Length: 147
Ligand SMILES: CC(C)(COP(=O)(O)OP(=O)(O)OC[C@H]1O[C@@H](n2cnc3c(N)ncnc32)[C@H](O)[C@@H]1OP(=O)(O)O)[C@@H](O)C(=O)NCCC(=O)NCCS
Image (cartoon, rainbow, N blue to C red; front, top):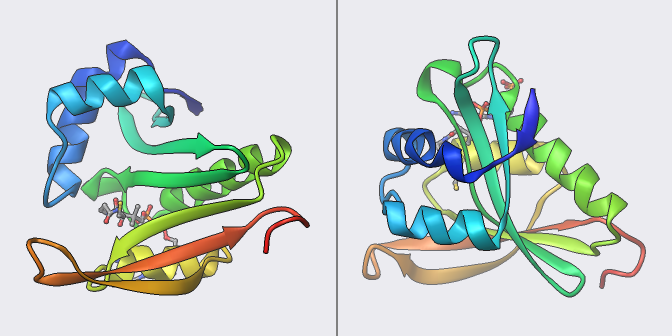
């Protein structure tokens, strides 16, 4: 089941982020994100959080800040489900495009993005880890008005 993230998800989010993100957010960053951004959680039959997206919106653009699926549930189509659900929601709300940055070495995430219609529109040299890894900038065109 997909549902909006709420403040009570904080502990589960911190744990899932720590298990999937080389530079996990602090509890404070998560608290701010829950108050400010759009979060969607994927809940399994045992009522456990097994995936999430966090995105923000400015005018007709959205940015995907994080997407993750718990390690034991990866490669079962859940990441695609989360991303496709976000894309549909943004389309429904008239958002023109979704942007995101991803580590150049994160080939799994890039395969997911390409499979959902994302295209690479730029590279930010040395964006991660004090210059050690580039970021690739992906965009997903959602509406007819995006350029
Ligand atoms: C990226 C991530 C969210 C993908 O979630 P997932 O549930 O495993 O993805 P799916 O099972 O929906 O995969 C959909 C497609 O993406 C591609 N893909 C996903 N993970 C892949 C991997 N490790 N290697 C190669 N391709 C991969 C495949 O094309 C896959 O389709 P297939 O399984 O039919 O071949 C997950 O690996 C994850 O949480 N990673 C750690 C956090 C992260 O890196 N987030 C992205 C940056 S914020």
